[in-house]
Every structure is written in C-alpha cells, then in structure tokens.
Image 1 (tube, one colour):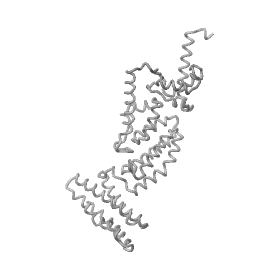
Image 2 (cartoon, one colour):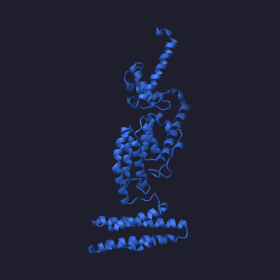
Image 3 (tube, helix red, strand yellow):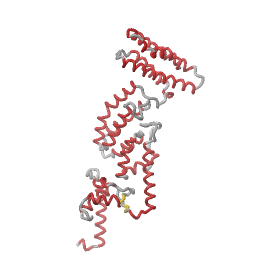
Image 4 (spheres, one colour):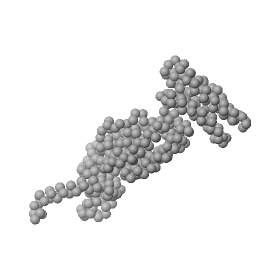
Length: 362
C-alpha cells in the first residue's frame, strides 16, 4: 500500500522547491492524486498474502499518510496559503482509509492537527456549562479543576501524555457521560459518589485527579469504603483510559487503600496501645471534638489545641488519624448526617445515665 503513495509523496516533498507561480498547479495535482490513490491503495491491500501482512501494510501506509499531512499542512501555514483544496483532499483520503481499516490503526498514534482541533472545539463548547451544573450538585471543585487541567494538557505540545487517536473517542465519551450526570434531575441522590463511580468506570487515571482523591480519602476514608468494597462490580470499559500507559484509576485506588491497611497492621503490632480507636468516621469524630470543646470536657478551650491531641491519639473507624486541619474545618451542610448519628449516640448515653442513676429523672 505504501508504494501507491510514491507519486503523492514526491509531489508534497518537492513543494518547497517550486516557484510561487507553480504552487497552485501543484496543489491541484495533489488533490487529484489523493482522489486516485484511494482506489490504488485498496487494490494493493487486496494483494496482501495474509491478514497480518495486510494489517502491517495499513499501519505503514497510515503512518506515511500522516507524515505527508503534517508536511503539507506545515507548508501551507508557513507560506500563508489559504487554498485548502489539497489539504482537504488529503484529509478526506485519511478519513476514508481510517473508516475502512479502523481495527488496524494503532490507537496510540499521535492525533493529527485537524482531528485535534475538532475534539478541542467539542470539549470547549460543552465542558464549562456541564461543570457549572456538576458544581451545583456539590461535586468537589478540586475534581473539576483537575479534569480541566488534564484535558488542557493534552492539547499542549510537549506535554505527556500527548493526545492520541484513542482520545478522539475518549474525550467526547467523557464529556457526554458527564453531561448525562449533570442533567440528571432525580432528587436525593449521592452525586459525589456517583461521580466517582463514573470516573472509575471511564478510567480517568490522571495523577492529579488521583491525588485529589487520596487527599479526600485521608480526610474521611468512610466515604470511599463503599466505593471500593467490591472492585469487581465496576463496569470499566476495556482498553479505555485517559492515559493508556498508566494503571487504571481503580487499581491505583485499591493499591493505595491496601497499602494504608498494611501500614495500620504493622503499626498495630508495634504498639497499638498508643491510639484510641473510635467507632466514628471522619466527620463524626470532627463533630465530636467540637462538642467536647463546647461542653468544656477538654482541658483547653481552644479547638486547634484539642485537635492537635486528637490528631495524634484518636483514630477513625477506618483506622485513620485525621490532620489538625481536617478536625477543625467545619462544613455544616456536609456534616448533617454526622449530627444525626451523634444525636443518637448522645441519647443512648443519656438513657444509660438515667438507668444507672434513676434519681436523675425525679
């Protein structure tokens, strides 16, 4: 197949040697050569002696076609030539070949500029309105910022991972899935949880996104406990990822949780008596500290000082030591469920007190 490109290759390779008056005629010849080559390439493909040979032939042909596209596009831009007839014909040939031989195109191939521009335009025209709706669903802004940063980096030259053919399908799929989530009008759903499930299923394994998840997990592990309890239940799309060269987001999450559990086991064997293991999750422990300070149970009346002691001594139900910052940062709306739980705990304590000392009820 690649041999059929020889005339077209000569036409494009020698463009820089022509005088200005000769260029329009050459561009017209390139357009005709692109139209003729499609039939020639198909005939050459049929002559392959095996399926493997045919696949390799397509890959070599496709790689050369991309190189010619880059060279022609660069020539037109450098010489400020507005006539797009030749480049359009070359792009049409490229698209027809890719449509017929999609299974033979390496998804790791760098995405050419005209496809990249289309994908970027689609993303930019949709993502901001979608993110506004997701923010209203209380999806943490740090996650949305990381998604924006990750997508922007794909369109920056020299950044790794560089944008590839698989992103041509991955990014629109990601945007469409996020749109469906943002447009869901059902009430009483845990949108934060559903958002994380979606990102795991779509394998958004950008390290910045994973790092933000780690920070939230360290602050309150109970939120992710249900998410990762049955990893096999996720319906991750095979061979579908933000970065095909990195482990999946689900695997990164599970490894981090398992690593933390191993460290807790080692610490427990060395001297578990130095900690108090509570039965509260992160938000409940934070609210409990607040109540202790307000009720004058602690020696210090400064919440930060008490939080420093809590952060060294009292672990959550999941075995996590919360930071001083996490213990003192309050969000009334997010901690309502914790308040309901503590109210039940306090009622139980009060009931027990009255049972032990009946005279208190008189």
